[in-house]
Length: 125
Image (tube, rainbow, N blue to C red; front, side, top):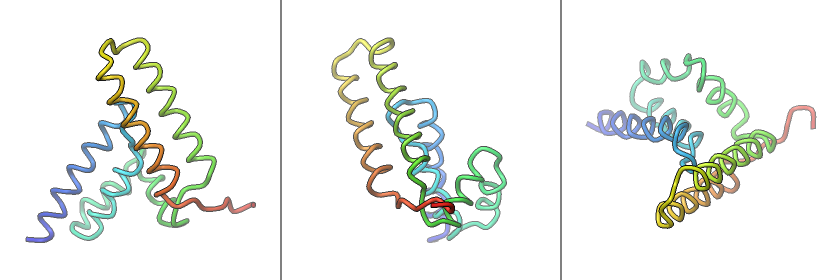
């Protein structure tokens, strides 16, 4: 029963991670890493499919190997996220309430990427 719950939670997390690719302010990386953590504890088959995925597999493998993300990857992710947030808020969203929700999600994403996801040094540092 626990494995089924973990698979469902992992799949929901994967959905949010994929949605984060298209929804500015919604972080992708933490959800994908959470998915990997849930799948590794519940389904070897789903975990292996995630690891061999050409888009997310290298990030998961690198995160597991290094136990975190380097500062350059974090900075790139946060900057790209905020560029998309401001672009969406300025060009595509007319509602002040929706803009505030978007900015709030961006702040949460920045906190997660900046302070919760561990920062590791580069190998050559």
